Length: 280
Image 1 (cartoon, helix red, strand yellow):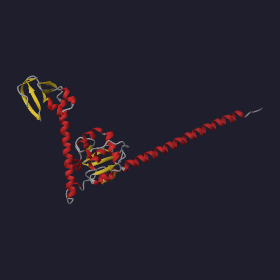
Image 2: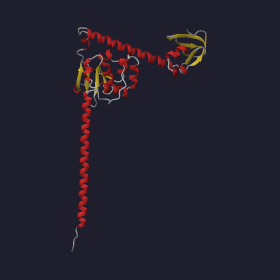
Image 3: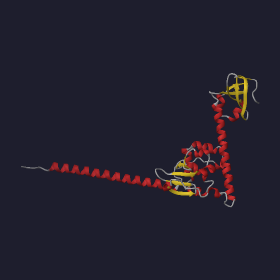
Image 4: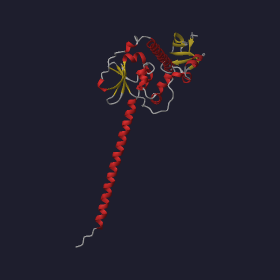
């Protein structure tokens, strides 16, 4: 029930319901968020409930003090709902693509390649590329990202020249979302365990939020596995680095042996010299 009459801030001048049983109130001597205690215990965390000032069965959160706590949790829930709706829409579009004659797929065909064409290592499909250079990156065209990636995923990339540029480690998030839509991306992944482990270890907040809005079957499992080895290119790079390390170790061992041999040679020369007697 909407508060009326008196409040801890004096007479109520304005009271607006901003969500179910959650109100923004302006009184004579203050303003902020007001929530019936029972409702607050249903929708807010224990910490936020404890932060409210209780009076007449309601919790008060003054502006400039604790008001940001319930507002933040409300925004979290709205953002989670938005991501859930986006995922549902993406699934519906995939069903249309799967059941149709390919007309819907033509919306995402013939997407212009990225400007960094000289660095392209491979292409999963139009609009999804792996590039080299100083570091490997996953590039996803804006046209695809807007339809099939959550805003949260896009926060891990920079948007340049019509493509989202993901550092390859963060690309695990993008590939996780794209693999359910495009078979080419699923085939690209050589290790689901490494993909999930990369998300678990490097992006635990994303995993928590994602798992909160999908069914149990779709959740990202807690996996213990090597990270950043979910693409063949990563595995090849790791092998190359290991070979280089082995070669460096062998070279270092060779140089150390040479140094020891030279040192022993000097010692033998010294000993030989000490045994020579010159008689005059």
